[in-house]
Image (cartoon, rainbow over all chains, first blue to last red; front, top):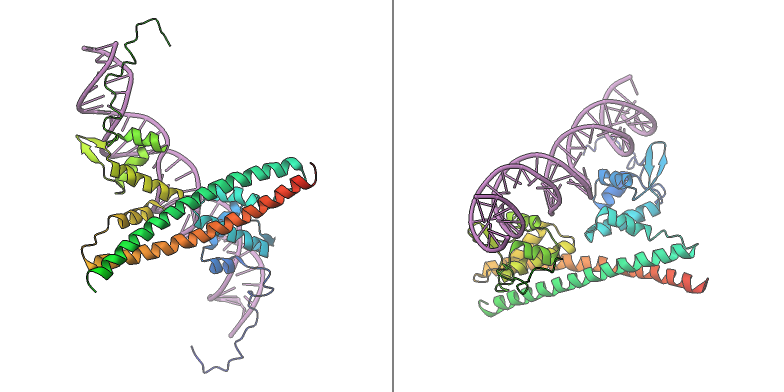
Length: 145
Length: 145
DNA sequence: CGGATGGTTGACGTTAACGTCAACCATGTT
DNA sequence: AACATGGTTGACGTTAACGTCAACCATCCG
């Protein structure tokens, strides 16, 4: 932190970030979401996201960023990238043809079934842990003060 | 299906299964839960279960079976075996000493936080899919009959 | 001009969670 | 006695989801 040289007011010449707030670099997103750039590239290689390219460089728009968020949420829920890929496709469905819409509806329904049963599992797990917590709490308040 | 030979009433001589309904063989459990025996042995090798041994053969009691169920539920929720291992330890806690109970309580609480945030994620996912479903439903009922 | 910075594509390494043999043993049935 | 059945322990193979590293390119900056 040398402060002898006359500072030209924070320098701030050409920071590549925060240009438009509509476009993002790969490292920006990586930092924002706490993942590696490698992971992001990997998701692209698996067809989960398709950012624009400027020259060779990836440029992420808001929708690319949004998809990335969906991916990470899916991961937190324990889904595989393959699962997540199918899940993402439900968001960009083609409603122009009846058959397509019916297909979509079926997929959405079966996915909802899965999620609801997962929710059941989650709730009973929470209940059980809450019970354990209760017992521990009692144990502490009862015996020694 | 040769039925010419006199059948001795279903044979039923010495089926090793369903002896006590309190003890189970590895293949029984594997079939019951739709997993492989290899998986079960793997869980044991990782210290998640410890069935008794009769000679070399594994014998599962009801509590071993119960633990196995907990493991599988954990897997459905997307947890790693390591996570599940820690989770299982919460069930067999030692409440004899205050310090131990306090430790347990902290672990239970942080685990509960995690589960609750996962539940949030799950609910918003369900909501979003429900919305998609609604749109698809409307699309179908509206246009073509 | 010479770094420093940030991006790129391979390509190989790694960890988790098993699958898949092979080789073996014990027991009951034919 | 011979075999079918069900169990055991290695040991190696496999897939997913990245980590890590090398070699390279473009740009900015003092």
